Structure formats: structure tokens, C-alpha cells
Length: 145
Length: 145
Picture (spheres, each protein chain N blue to C red):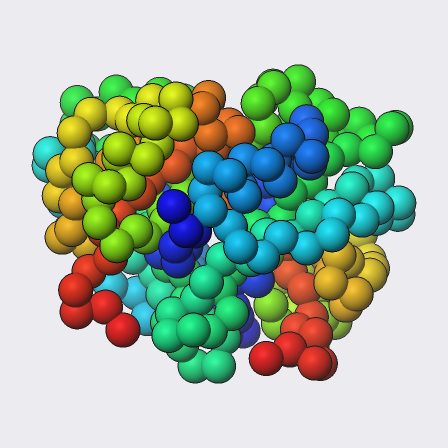
């Protein structure tokens, strides 16, 4: 496998509304997308763009707020009440090849590929197999820049 | 302030040597810089490049291993023995203006600006004031792409 683009870093927050105000007013973000629910994953998400090198598209911040009944993000926020870094997400050209690759390396892929926040197939790999970093792998959107 | 480029994300590790093997052999990184000590900050660091959009320079992974006597990273690794996400780092055009900005917003800047891993001035902002995310602010290197 060849390392892909760092599409986004996931940041858990108790309140996307508060986080939007923080990224806009304190950090000076100029492009904050509309939040939306991802009910299959039990989260509300919101993407904040960061500028890349030379005017390119940079790595995004994915704000994540648990929807009612989401135990894993709620438990993360119990340990980190202000929020915190939750995962990183790299792009790959083909999700099933990537799943086979990680499994061949003895890495625990968490479930089958499913549609993620950018509308393409994604899976997560267990943080204990990934140097302590919960890692999302997503297929690059076809219309990506 | 205007949000700058996400220069790198800092990932703590008990062993940079093991992490280099992981990023090279499992993640498929093709550009891993030489590790070096940053004695003022009590760490050994190593930058792993990720590809940006359209062939641009992407956000780097900064691997961080504590040097002997470094209490804060060692304590992080006690809680996260496999390593984990430690901080994020955004670029700014002028470090002193950025420090004044964060202070004007009531954010706790941790110490005076000092030379960081990329050779330019940096400071950290307290995670409790930054939505739970330890945030490094660094002046953009002049020779940056």
C-alpha cells in the first residue's frame, strides 16, 4: 500500500455548535460546511476546511458529536469532557484492496466497509494495532480535486 | 486571525524506530525524514510526509518519543502505552501576533515562543482552552513551498 492523503482528522466535541463558533471566531476558519447527521454511525458531523500548501485543498477537521444512543463517542467525551482528537483518516484508491492489505498485516479492521461522511466507502482499524491511533480508511471521492 | 495550514499532527510513540517501520511497511509512507533530538523540548522527533491534494505538500505526521527526563510525554505514554495522537500544529505568518491573538481570546499560551522542530518559532496553547486539543502554533518557514 502507498500512503494516501490525510483527508481529515476527527475531533470529538460535546457541541458542534460551540465548536463551529470556536473554529470560526478563535481559529479563523473561513470555510465551515453545514453539519449533518450520519445516523448509521450514530454521529452528527461537521467539516472545517484548512488551507493546503500552494492554494490546494488541505486536511479537514471533522467535528463529531454523538447522537443519542452512541456509546463510543459518549464514552470518549466522558473521559475528555472538552472534546479531543478522536481519529485520523487517510484516503485510498480502492477500499476492498485496502481492507485486504490491513488484514494481511494482522490489523483488526472494524466491520465491513460502509458509506462514510464523504459519501464513499470507509472502514476503521483498531487503534491498538495502529500505534494507538484510531485510523479511518476512506476511498477517495471520484470528484475529488 | 485566519486559519493556517495544518502543518503536522503530533503522534507520541514509545519507539520512533518501531513507528518508522510501521509507517513505511504498513502505511506505505515513501518519504520519512531522519529522526533528530529536540533537547529543549525533551523529545526525539521524526517527520513522515503525507501527499497533499494535487501533488502538493500534505500535512506531516510528527512522531514524538520522549528523551530521558521528559515527564509530559512519558506520562502521556503511561496512559497510552501504544502511543497516540498528541497535538495538532497550524502555521501562522507571524508568531508574536498569533500569541497576542490567542491571549486576547483568553487562551492560555504555554510559555514564550521558542524554536520548534521545523526551525521556526512555535508555542503551544492549553488543550482545555482549545476544545480538548493540545494545539501548537508555528511560524511558517520562509523557504516553505
